[in-house]
Length: 178
Image (tube, rainbow, N blue to C red; front, side):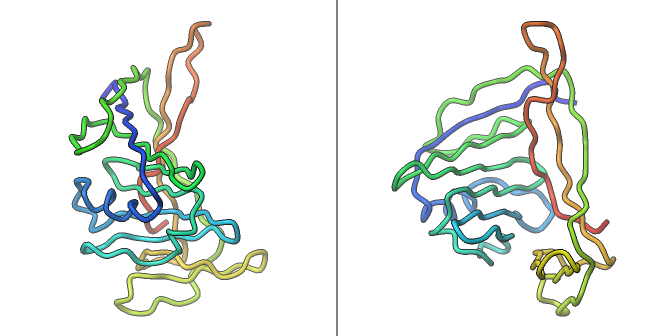
């Protein structure tokens, strides 16, 4: 386990998020998943083969793009916004601030089951529709082989001044078959 979390920031607009994500090194998972929060919706999206799919990124007030190695968070501040990159590896990226190093006491790997069961899977589309009686259909950028999908996350533990070790942050990692 790496005992350091690297955090770096960069000011940018919503339109620049796509270029930021594509400029970052990706793992062998085949893409970068994401969440886009707009005033009217929360949607899932994906960057695959150099292309963005899903969601209205230009309307976003918050974006979270993630893969096994890093998570990029973007929050709107007026007409622009601030992107924050979290990783357990030091990533060299042009135009980003010098990374802050946060000493970790440990990590916890977790997963959360998404609401709904697979309704359909358009063969080769890379997307699955999940449905449930309590929610509307949810388009998920995973071509799954099971009826359920989960979100893998990693929680970061830190020792605070009073001596207690607490979860202080969480990084999204991947959407996978459950």
